[in-house]
Image 1: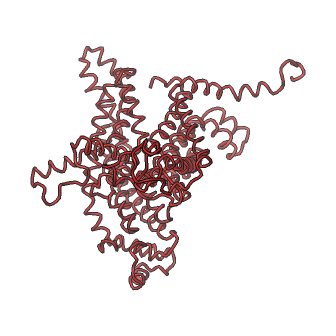
Image 2: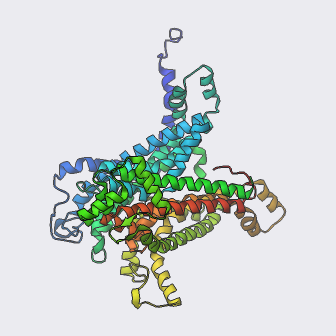
Image 3: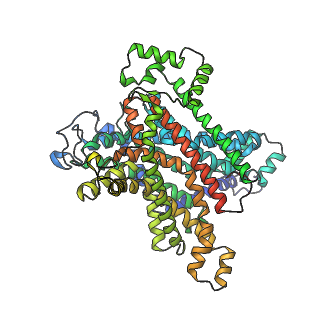
Length: 297
Length: 327
């Protein structure tokens, strides 16, 4: 075969088959202006988070000037908070906690969700019954309250917060993955795989799961946004790592002064909003790119 | 299955769920690092040695896990959810005092989000690319991305401080406030901003949901038939289509109750609304673990009851559902 068509390199047909759908998704995504704006904003935020501490190597908790200085005065672009901290520094360092917890918690959410959803949807029967009952149990508990209890009992740290958020938010992902597996397991290419005697593990992880990727990627983007909101909410309830600056913490400590000073609460909130908004725009863009026919919806 | 059998089965399942919540509560307490007696007494409270010894004896903290779990469940069955050392009262007493304001906030937010959201969605569905549809898309993005506690604070700055229309916190004006109908008005006045804050998130959700559902229904054959009969468009939309389009909205109303509770914790804290959410926040500051675990249990109980009611409501709205099929 390779020798009879020397003009074409042997690997090329394979490469085309694997890459074409993803290239098409990228083309659709690129055409969506809101999604691209979201992606650019998020990349900027990541860049600033990584570079910030090198450009301003300071203690973000230390006072830098007079208390509650309005934005623009004495060289403080965004003003200072009720403890005299520079809000620019607070925002720069606060994004570390936001992005780390957002990514880690979403990773936990997706992992548990895939595990539960895949096994329930593939094996069905008593496995599905048990796993879905556990999923329903977790849906009965108000997620924020459960996260509050876990973080309080295991004392707030980046780790306990990420784990708590991951543990309370996976049921939606599990349901999604299960629905995908229920649909895909009946399709011909899966039946063919079973007919040639493939092991269950191979069918689950290398045959069905990659085909469930599109909705999973969209749901992963949404999970990151939700995890960021949870992290901010917990910090607002004074459950944040005491050694790590966070946007929710800034809002929480400056809340008593809102009627005299709007800026120390407004800017961190805007930062959370913009971050979650860009994640959500990316998610919507991916969704449209994966399902071009549903665009009118 | 007939209705009584369905209800019996559902009730049994609800009890099993409640039992699981209790086991989880206890396991969390058991696994938590540090001296459990101090955790129970509240670290910030600084309990005396005698008090700690009493707690150890009361809770049987030297016994094996299963024995301790059994003792815990035995107490709960007798209505004893532990003692809040901060209030020096049973946890149940503290929680019942804060239950009504939370229910008022959560139920009115849900009703407003559903009714107004469905209204918006129905009108948007008639023009899938119209202005209203675009507004709903923007609303949905805002509802998803805005941190609810920050929205609340911004509303306080805007509508309670810059333009002083509403009070900033609390549920009434205290002992000097009005009585009778005046009091009802006072509570509604205090309720306005918290409800506005909490319902915004779900308003977007329900308008999106009912729009999609309505668009599905409007494409159905029986709608074409109704139109072909020459029926008034208003009758077609509101009598024939709306009834069917509202089904997924009912389903989600029950499922969302837990999430709504999470939002209520933050909104109540922002507005110092005297409910379970504010109590939960204060319990964190006081390290009052028994109260926090009690709140977790009772909110799960409320979610379970809400799910049961939704299930029954669904059967009433949609007579096609006869079996106990799970969603």
